[in-house]
Amino acid sequence: MTILNESGIPDVLPPLHAASGLAERLPGALVVVVGTQAEAHLVQSLPGAPSPNLPGPTRNPRLMFAVLDPERPPQQGLLASRIAEAAARPRGTELVLLVAGRSARLLGVDAAFEARLVARKLELPAEVVDPDAPHESPGTLSTDLEARTLAALVDLCPERRTSDLLETGSPAKRGGLFGGLLGRGREERPGTQGHPVVLLGGASSSPGSARELAAELLRAGVEVAGAVPGELPALGEGTVVAVLDPNLTAAAQVAERRGARVVRTLMPVGVDGTARFVQDVAGEAGVRANEVSRARSVWEELGALRSRIRGKRIFFAGDTGVEIPLARFLADAGAVVLEVGAPRLDRRFLAPEVQALGPDVDVVVSPDWRGQMERIEEARPDVVVASPGLYVPLVARGHLCRSPWDFLEAGLYGYAGARRVLELLARTFERAETLDALNL
Image 1 (spheres, one colour):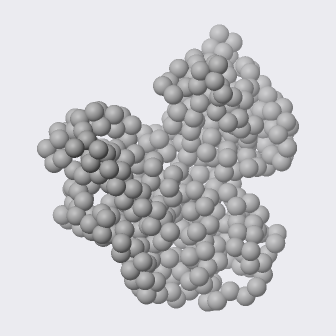
Image 2 (cartoon, helix red, strand yellow; image 1 turned 30 degrees about the vertical axis):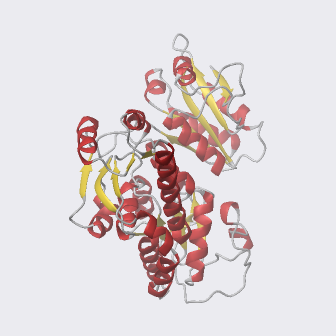
Image 3 (spheres, one colour; image 1 turned 90 degrees about the vertical axis):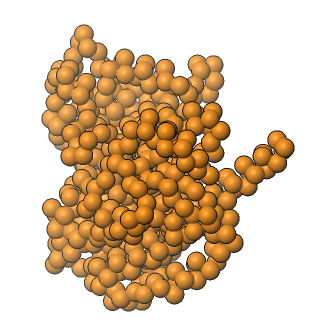
């Protein structure tokens, strides 16, 4: 068994992509993915893998691959020893995440035992993430590994009890992502916040998005104590957890078991979604906030962009799990949403979204791609938001397409995210119109 650096393993396999993103966003974490050499070669053979003669992906010393040999299964404790050695190389390791699934189990790896041994050897928190764990909903999302990892991180957060003082401004509590986030130190904040707020975000929320949302909450009188991922803030009784991604059911359940209050409201996508999110999170934190005037002002500022998408017919094929909030915003902005595909529908988080979307829009759960292709061909929408699997054949048939990851990478959360989403679509239509004019 060997421990390999990420070098040579491209970011094209969804679970590894999620692990890489976590390694980047958790600067103190060492993420170790355990699998066979065949799996490593499979990753390198996937389309988009770099040629040996070309520069590989950016190397991240905190993302490593533990290669298992099926002919020589590792002895108990060997994996922990190798991980301990690897953890000693990158300085500043504060947490070890061991990603071990079906192949590791079949080869006799007891990941939980190895993690406990790592924790004892390094005197650091160590947790197991199983990318193959059964999910209560059918199917697997590319974000499932990250969702399970965030559940493990929530479980590692220090316990907070109602007797604890609210110390979100204390220097000892302000490290990681939110250390100096808004540069306000210990000065007095408006409002009468009675509960600390923790943001729980996943694949669709970048550190920049978290900072923007924290700034919006602070403007409303609510200070954010921390975020997962990004750090391990105290979490427990009296903590308000604001979920930024509807795929994080398992992590939210862990927070609730520890006594935290999980806010179930609209996702902070679009103008009305952000306003409702800020207002409801503030209310749970004990602060009275009214976002009506702020939302009205933002809608007015977006008037020119709204005119560019008004009446445009949009079809969401469904891939990331954030299609419903995105569709709700674009429908509010004047677009005509023909259909929304959703890989799964967790009503505990998305019930407010489905209600806000309204009964006139069809929501198709776990859609069949053949049926989707037929409906798209029949409807001929102005743009299709589709995953790579449908993107190429749709473009070949003359459809204008955008990837859902384009919206995620642009940053779709908060009032600023609403502008970015509309700008992205406006540029899409303008470019298509320019190309059409050249073909005349």
